[in-house]
Each structure stands twice: as C-alpha cells, then as structure tokens.
Image (cartoon, rainbow, N blue to C red; front, side, top):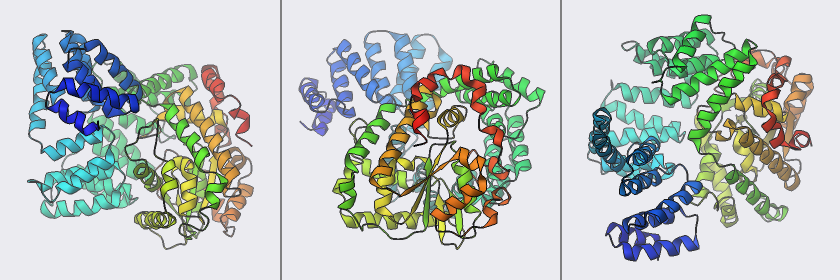
Length: 622
C-alpha cells in the first residue's frame, strides 16, 4: 500500500484499514518518516497508546526535529490524562514549528484545564493570528519548520498567481528565498513589493538583508540607517547595521551600532555576542557586570542565554580567566547543542557513500564532462581553519575577486538529495544517474548564479564555502578546471576554535566535543579519498605553515592558481574588501603568531576532544 493511501484512510478515520498499511510500509522502509508518523497516529486512534509512544520514540531517534511527532506525543498523553507531559510535548512541538494550529489549540485547552489563564490566553492569541494567515502561507511555514525548504519555495512560488493576497504570499516567498540564500532572486521580488508599497518598513528591512546577502553592504547600510532614523528603538536593526559595518571594515561604526542595540534592549544577547565576535573589542567592567546580571535573570529567552554565554566566554578568555571562560563556553555549547538535534552518523554515512561511489573508474567514465571555465577558486575545509586568511591573500591579487561563502553547491546537493532519508540518502548515488550533459548544465548554472556576487571585472573569483569539501567529486565533474584549496589547521586548535564560536546558522557539529572531533576525522578521511581518486586536484595549505612562513605560502598558493606573485598578497591586511565571516577583523591585521596555541589554555577541559580525535591528530598532516 502506498503512503498516500494510508494517509487518506487515516484522514477518513478508517484506522483498522490504515494501520496494517502503515505497518507494512515500516517493515519495508523502517526509517521512513511519514510511515512511522502515520503508524503512531493510527495506533493512538485505535487506543494502542503504549505502542504509539514506542513508535514515536523510534521516530524521534531518526527525526528529532519533526514537530508533528511531539504533537502526536501530546495527544497520546492527553489520552492517558497526563496533562504535564502533554503540555511539555505540545510546547516542544510549537517551539520547533510555531504554525501548528492543533498544538496551540491543545495548549489553550490544557492551560485552562490546569488553571493557567495567562498561558491559555497566549496560546489563544497565537491561534487567532494563525487563523488569519492564508493556507498556502501556513503550509509553507510548516514545510520550512520541517526543513523542506525546496517544498516551501515551490509552494509559495506557485501561490503568487492564485493568492487572494499576493503581497503577503510574495513577502513570505522572499523570506524563504533569504533562508535559502537566494539573495539576488529575493531582491527582484522585493522590487515588486516596494513598487506597490514604497514605505513599507518590513519590505525595506528585507531588502536591506537581501543586499547584505549579495555582498552589497554599502546599500544595506544606507537602508538600515533610513529604517532606524524614525525608529531608533529597534535593537535588531542596530545589530544588522553593525554586521554590515563590520563586513566593510568600519569597526568603530559597528561597535557603536552593537552598543546601541544593547542600550535599546537590555539583555539582548546578540548585541553582546556581536561585540565579542569582533575579536578586538574589550568590554568594560560595567558591561561584564550587566551580562552576568542578564544571564542570571529567570525570564531571559534561551537564545539570549546562548549569546551571552559565548560572549562571556570570549571576554573572560581575553582576560586570562580560563576556568570561568570555559564554564560559559560549555554552557553555551550545551544549550545550543540541545536545540540542534545534530546526528553525526548522517555525515559519516554520506562520507562512506562518497568513497564507495566516487571511484577512479567513476571519474574515468565521465572524463571531459562539465564546463571548462577556470574562473572559480574553491577554498574548503572546516570553519576556523584559516580559510578566510587564504581568501584574503588571494583576494589581494589584482586578478582575483573574493566573494563570500556561496551556497550554490549545497543547494544543488540539496536538490539531488530530494526528500530521501538521512540514513539512506539519494546523494551522492544520484550522481550515477546524471547524463554527461547534466554536469555541464550544473556547471553553467553555478557560474550564472555566482555572477550576482561578483563586483569586479577580473578573471577569477573565490567561493569560500568550507563544507564544499564534502562535494569535491561533484565540483570536479561540473567545473574540471576550477582550482580547489584545502585550508587545514591542527585539529585541536581547529576544533577548539569551533567550540568557542557561535555561528549565525549551520555548522551544528561545532557545539559538542565528540561531534566536532568526528566531523574533523570525517573531513580528513574524505580529503584523503579525494587525493587518491583525483591526484593533484587539491592544494593543501596548513595554517601553521602560513603563520610560520607567509611569503613562501603565498607563492605556493599563487603558483597553484597560475598567478604571478604580487606583494599585495603578502600585505593582505591592507586590502579593503567586504568580509562577512567570523575572521573579518583578524584578516585586517598582520598575522598573530600567538593565536596558534590558544587551545592549550583549555587543555584540562578538552580531554573528550583529544580522545575522540584519536590518530587524526597525527594523520591531518599526511
């Protein structure tokens, strides 16, 4: 029985017929998300509550970020008349997916029943707001919460022509485009919205974010300033303005913007973390006291707690108070890790599949495919590995433009992956099914899409998305003449650098010592595979070698890229350009040799990291 038929039987309340179908689907594909979910629903509806809860436990192990499973768990506990557990389950569901109307309705009822009228009123208000949204918008937001970005985008794109309120659908479409880092497309849609409502502040805020995403920070700065002029109390706009100031090297203005945000909203964790993330700012005693007071508050939102813990970790590190600093780094990581639901085995499965599929024979059979354009230079590796430094060195050359961490390759991989299970992914196996012509089309698409981020008329540009190391086989087939540089750093230093960095998005492996160690080991293993099947294709640059002998490393990088030596590449810190990564301020200063061994100040707390890295601490130099 197909899953659509089981879903239809469930909707018609024909549970006795739906249950065997769901069981049969789970027996064939036990890790299929929808099959397990429908199995649990039908078990509950047939009053088999214990079996339903057991199924939901299995579903949580495989898909811990699926909001509907917690909603279904809430219904199970309601059947058992266990209100506290039901409340916990429904609250978890709306935390992941705020548009689950049924969960809000259940929360309203349960809070009234348990004598909490204030929380019942809050749930009712959420429910009222959701009922006012168009069905397409509700469905798209739900898909977005479930991680189906492509589905949300396609749904909203289709709804633009039929929506009774195309402005609302278009603005929602823009938000999805921004989440998918399709900034140029978002700008085009915003032009249409602003043409209809020139003074709409929400549209202008979205346009500023889209401009910043495209690397046009000067336009974004003007837009944020115009928005703040009549409304200086908007703390989040001050932070966004500060980010754009930081990206273009206007540090004093960035500091002023972040401080304005903290004044507009006391306890605003993002403002303090943004100051700490400059890596050069020193907090006053009053500011440190204020952070401690805020983090001790009982009503501080979890996201502010996370930001403040990382900010305090960083500022206490700069003061040499390593024990207290580590306490805050550890708490921030624990909070962040708890909300990410990261599963390291899924990355390891993907890596194993890459080695199984991308063999020498695989590449020999596809020789000559792709676009021969030599303009892209990919810099890959782990975050905090010195990749921004290599980018700055190359971008200081007259023939090379630095763009940013482009999301084009990950988006293509996402499309190839489709809705397959993480434990049984379609990619990279999907590469076997692509005709030679498809690799050329993908290469052309990449080059066309990346033009939106290029401002200079020069032959070469840089794509510094670090996690592209997982897709070098695809990149080679799409763009066989592109240059690939592996930025590598000593594993303890690199992994500790990740543990103390709070990323704006992604890099979920970085908030746990075991996870980041396993990710590093996977990276080393996969890069060794690429070296074997694509010999000479990748240039490996060790960060410690760059620090030790800058000019020799610069010459080696330029020679690999077929570029003549230019002294500006050695004086990289004098190059003025937009840099949006966490290292933006560091690459505007000469190399700091003292930063190489900073992790040793925390060695007593990094035992799990050292143990989990194992022989990768030696193998990384191979």
